[in-house]
Image 1 (cartoon, rainbow, N blue to C red):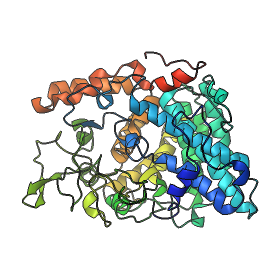
Image 2: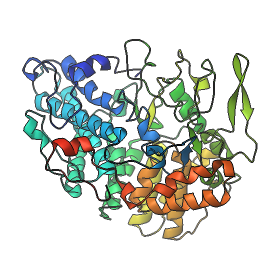
Image 3: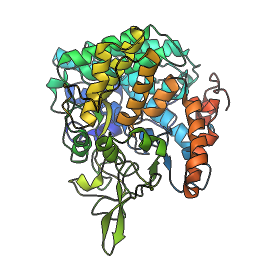
Image 4: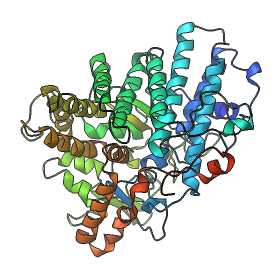
Length: 522
């Protein structure tokens, strides 16, 4: 992390907890002797933030933009065995267990901070900001848990006894109600984005944008509370009307900035800040641009094995005009070894399945390069996402697309075409006078084009109730139309069943918690 979390290693030590997070108390200095000043509170808060990264790479350092969110936008190369990358896993899968543990570690750390935030003698505004960030982060981790696992134990106090592990699953509506409650309180406490020189801490508009996302989830599957479309629209409008954010006029520059450690708080409302490359004393690095990067054998340029390949479905969805955004999102080249270096080599027009995600390109990194890790930040919510959430909510609230809905989606498209975002453009703008259903199809496709490889597609498909259907159709298309070399790309789609809408409750949790029940199908 470049700006505010250079103390994360210390914070992680202070706030460390054991792997069975629902049943163990953190093993750091007693709270009675801590939380005595603002520095203590900030270290504790950093310890909550750092669970967004996870040293085992199940969170946003890798898993939550790759193998834990398999969808129709990409597949994994050279998969010769059944594993999570082709949607073959059970409750004993290590990755499924570790990400559960990581998120409950974060929740326990947040609970400890919230229970002690009143102790320090400090400025009340900043005390409240720390409290707001802790509330939001606790809610965000519960949102992720509910999104991935369904109903989960809702624990709003720090672990004090092994008996605290025996918690039943809280009804999903109640989990989301608590998420909304915490986030709404946080909205009144956290700082504006203008208070910071970066976007790695949670600001008011970041809270509002994530709330819009939460409300869209609640409006969709499985709760189907359509009244929440009104709330999603309200909160998307709060972000837009704040005046703090705008689209970066150059789509590719968003991701170049990440690789170069340049902050852009206008486009990116909230990012997970990575730090270092696992060489030295800090272990807060990620693999953004490595796991989901352009194949390159040369470490000086920026190594990537090119593990993720893009689907022809995604490539073709850009059409023949949306080529600027397509050729940045999906790299038109790879690097081929040549002596002691590597040469940029373009793919042919027939080589679609061979291509890699191209948003984060390691050739732009300006720090010392390691083979598998870097300090490239990962965006959790961008302004274009807010505009698309507004367009979707407008279409639902008003039973058809409004002028504001059209303008929101067209602004994103005009930027993609390299055009001024506030001027109508015949090539970029979607057709006028669409029905509600037709506008929704355009919206779905635009979210895939704009936000591909950002860990959002699977979430979208599940809340729209179309994940299994979409994956099965993808498999059928690959089987029928892909070159023989790439037909294995249908594996994930072929393996998906209704149970895969949720992860299983980890076997480690079932072992220690006799009140929890397994998800259906596992």
